[in-house]
Image (cartoon, rainbow, N blue to C red; front, side, top):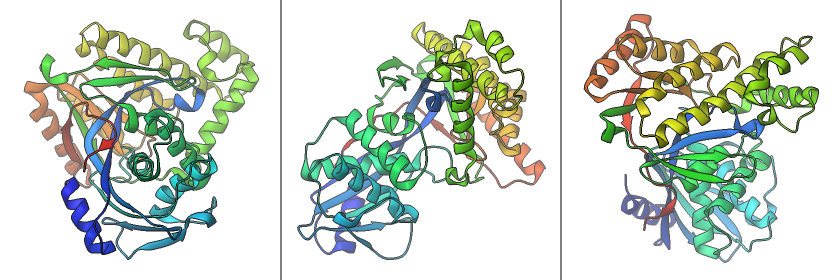
Length: 384
């Protein structure tokens, strides 16, 4: 796929040339899962996989949307009639972005859009955030500039929260918009302050693998929202603004204070220890010792599996098989219940790890996983 292909497809669908092509990447989270819903810390990186949006302004107030992946024809909506809950399916994401821009007072109008994407949907790699951010950047390019990339990321998140109805945190859209090639993004999801931390696995003789289990997840089914509500309830019980305000050293006391609510204690344990792991991994990357991060990745997976309850047998199998084959560490990434796992391994042993994971899936009767290497990529930008 390419910007040129997106532009050519736009002309074929909409009958005229586009005014430009904008792209945003998917993301994979190195460490820091389910911490952003408690205003915590995350450490994502941008994937090389992109979503492209080719776009052209319209003067009649219509938003006309077409996706190469979705099938079907053009979805036609009126920009001035967009409202939360009024649009279903994939079109809700770009429509929600236009709604969020207009709600924020930006003079974004109608547009023809064509979408191409190589970010796997349902794989926990933020395909929805990539679509939202690419759309926001396209509309900003057509009608703006309205704001900077972090501002567009905030509007894209607003679209997913309020228009689509998924109560996601700030990580996905911020990573898609703001990551830098060759770096992991240390993000404080409370104040959205960012640090770019150098991370080049190949320079250290390492390889970072993503194993897409091909088990689709769905954030709209309520599991994500229930865990977020549980974290918020625990914060109220502990009399803190959010669970990121519980220091790691005070975790035993916090768990003791929740002794009467067994359902909240494991949520607190995961968030507090995961925030601690983010800090530890960031420090190791800054010290030039990414190998030592491996056990922390595996510990993060155990916490997500046992305390947060968001793993699944296929994700657990990736982590177990990779570890048995000599990987330095592995963990599920994304919201869980399917999707992808991340594996950190020596470059020389990457092939053996891949074969071990594929073999374990075959022996268990699962669909073959899609396994590929990634390196930290560039965030959203205009590409045509």
